[in-house]
Every structure is written in structure tokens, then in C-alpha cells.
Image 1 (cartoon, rainbow, N blue to C red):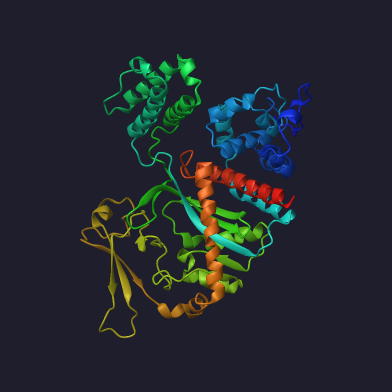
Image 2: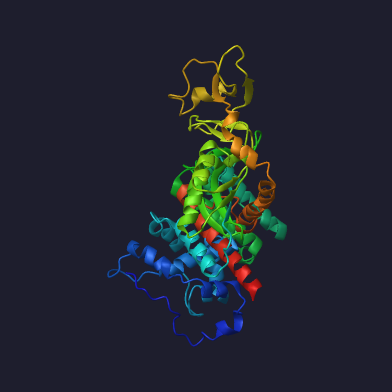
Length: 485
């Protein structure tokens, strides 16, 4: 049963908050800035309103997730800190003496209450609404880019992943107390996953008998990560096989296994839209949805700034039709005409990527001399040994073929207007501001743990993206408001 009661419980200790949570505390300022009732309105249909046990307010549960994102904590560490950190309890609208939730409630909330909720658009839209109301967003410029997030398990086998986490625990313990080494169970040397799980359980049990060690933050954090990893394995059976993560490429020689977040940001550094995809997707394909989502949030747009990935013909046509200046340098290959959408161009590597995520290893210019009225083309060659065993080879690879190539026709005459624009001083001046979104990507990754997925699957990545961007936008809004005072 759910009741719409989010007022602070009457408590004889409520005055403590005025003493220990200063007015410039970020959590206090967020509470004053945001009316979180929109969370209740969005999620109330996920609860029974008149039957069963009284449920924890969805607003409070959401705030737990927001705290987890702001401070980059595990579920267990978040709940533990909420017991004694009065700024946390104030933010959660709890009485100082009130009991906190069990950490398992957060898992249930994510999986059961947030399904089928467009949380990413909802939270970004709310922050843009606040920024517009406060007069923070005044520009009509969007800066677009994509940032990658590695899958939590990073293509490691289950044994490799668990061994890494147990090693981190042992290392943290040895740095504080080397005498613990003889007390630990003998390390598993077999390749049986069940035996590795047994070893992890034994290691956890051994440490739990040493409260003076596990109470130390350096050990406690590593131990909690190991516990969550063991539980994740039980839940997903094989955590190294993230069902949605895909191989993406940053350069010709470097790749990652995970996801991409396609971002649009105002000139004031407020993220106005995001689309989260698997790692192999091309950046340029998401310019239109980023612009449309930003418009839906209330933005007026007359300029979009991005790198060469966004200079595809479709994007040039779309922005021209909508009277938007596209500040994106042409690429000699991306700027060609119609091509098969299944193969996507990776602007960092300068190569095409097949639907399975494999990148061409070589390209060759084909001038097609001797032919009339035929434009030159580029031939991209793929590793046929991968094609032969690829699960997506049907309709793409012809059995028995010794090569696999993808041809792209170059049509350099179709973008004269864009080419002329990129040679103007206006274009060059606007292009210099693109660094702002690169700094924002760095903030997401280095301050809020967005470099690695916190769970498996695209759904988990979307929740992580939604809460992280919400937190980052609120912090930016507060910074600008405080500078105005």
C-alpha cells in the first residue's frame, strides 16, 4: 500500500538538522531546489494504493539512488552511511532516530518499480525545466557528443572476474595487517566456477569473523564489492556475458566492451538530452533524436556543435530543413550519399564496423579508372575468419567466400554549402566551444563512476545514466545559482 506522505516525521530531535546540516550543504540545497513529487506521480501506478503493507515512499527510494550516484557508493555502503550521516537523513526526509532500509530494497526498487518508466527523459526534462525557470539556460546552442561506458564485467570469464575481486580484498587486508594471510582459505587453482564461488564464500566468512579488520573503510569497500559480485553471479548465472553490451571502437587499434551515451548539452553546460545504446552504434545516427528531445524539454535551438561524426548527409539535410546551423566538419567518407545503414562508420578509427561490432582491418581507394560517370569508392576489408563463425553471418557473408568487403561510394559534390560554411570565421569560432562537452564527459566518468557500468544490461545502464545525469545537472544548476548570489 502506498500513501502520499513525504513530510518529515515529528521528532524531538528534528532540531539537530538545523545544527549539523548547514544552509550551503548541497543536499539541503537540492531539497530546496527540486519538488520531488514528480517521482511519486510517475511511479504511483507501480504500487497498490489501498491494500497490503505500507510501502516505503518512492520519493525516498529514488533519493537513495540519487545519493548512491552523487557519492559513488555500493548499496551496502550507502545504507550504512545513511545510519549516521544526518545530511543523508535530512535529504531522505527522515527523523534522526528513524531506521534506514535494508540494502536489498534498492535492488527490488530498481527491478520492480522502474521497469517501463522513461526515467532518463523524465529526469533530464525536470532539470532542464528548473534551469529554464531559473533563467540559467539562455543560449540556443547545443553541443553534442557520445561517451563510452565499459561493461561491468568487461568480457572476463566468471572465474577471472571473481578472482580479481577476491584479490582486491586480500590486497587491502595485507596492506593493513599482513598477519591475516595464514587465516585465509587456500586459493582455488581449478577452473571450476563452483569451486571459485566456494572460495569467495570462505574468504567472506573468514573476514566477517574479524570485525576490527572489516570495519576499516579500505577493506569494507572491497569486501562489499566482492559480496555484490557473488550475488550478481547467482542472479545472472554468468555475469561476464552481459546480454546487451557490445564491442565499440575508440580508435582503429583500441576498443571497449559496453555501452554508449549520446549527449546533448546547452552552452551553459546543462545536459538537455541523452540516448543510451550498445557500444557499437554510430554517434551520427543520434543527432536528430537528441535535438528533438531537447526541444521537448523546452529548448529553442538554432545551432548544433559536434565533431565529424555528425556530418552525415541526413544530418545536414535535417538541420537545414529545421533552420539549424550544423557546426560539424565534413569527413571525406561520412559525407557521401545513401549507403546501407547496417554498417556504421567509426569516425575515430576511420573505418566501418559491421552489425556484429567487428571493424574493418584495411581500406583501399578504388578510383575505378576506365569507367564512365562512376564516382570513385573506398573498399573496406573485414577479417573473413570472424565472418565464418559470426552469429549474424546469414545474409551478410556468403559461405565459402575468401574475402568480405564493404564498398562506399564517394560523392564529394553533395556538400558544397556545408564545406563553404566550415571555412567561415563563425564556424571556426563556434567549433572552439566543443571542449565543454568533453569536460562534461570527464566529470561523468571521473567524479561519478560513469566509466564503468554498475550492473549488467541496457536497462541497468539507463538507470545509471538517468540518475548520474540528474545529479550532474543539479550540481551545475546549484553552482550557477550560488555564483549569482
